[in-house]
Length: 384
Image (cartoon, rainbow, N blue to C red; front, side, top):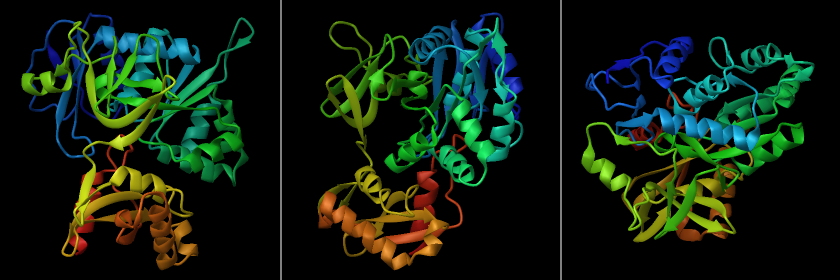
């Protein structure tokens, strides 16, 4: 089966190619860093998504028509059917799935015009109002936490943004952990938020508010979250060794995806604790940067902070908090650092306290909107 890359930033190009790929009439769609990919893929492939990810290691994930369709149908089963607004890059799996859900539902998606701003989001949302036989058609969208934060900030000053947020039946928010304070703000504003968990390897979000979608199963094996079900990718293109390592089979033949995330299953509800490998050794003690980051984000002005590890002459490695200026301008940087250190000490212990706070104008991000942790780490390391 032929694989054709889609280049450029126009999501309509992706939509056209995706329709053909899902219906089986056209070639498979190549998204992302596709210049090095072969021209042929196995039959049944719909999309190959190549991404560098937040760690900077490129992977080409093979997604079948069946997996993408299963994901779209399971989402409709959970949140309902209606019209979708694309507010994310179409080359990112969460954005691509907005298009897949629209194709499966046989509805044209609304597409945000130009770059994401509260104004462009509001304009697109206002154009979606429609009905069928007198019944309002529900609307849905998918965002990352940083986008939701921008909309909430704007809604404080502009009621039209608030109206746009409230107009959606459900707003899926994923890509990274949603800070509790942001979720509380959204719910207070009247936005209906569903937190999603998943990855490109699971055709996007497959666990909503901690509960797996229909057909998806979870297990935690030796502390690692693993996923099975019809939404799983075929593997990594041209890398059988990595595929076998990431998608093992249990003795009964069930195929699982090893997420690399630490988590717990409590009464059927998944609680993700962060990346298993996002750990530094500081003074001979293992410190989970994900856990430190969750605590730091409870401090006023550090809601969207990123915590990275850098070499340290005294401790071997140390954690550094990186945050944007803004609310931080109203308060002393040293006070914020001390508040963050105190919060981490109380929750985890003195050994896990961050060493520094670095304020920047803007955090480096990936096209998906996630923080580019590797770029942030390199920038902080260069300051030493």
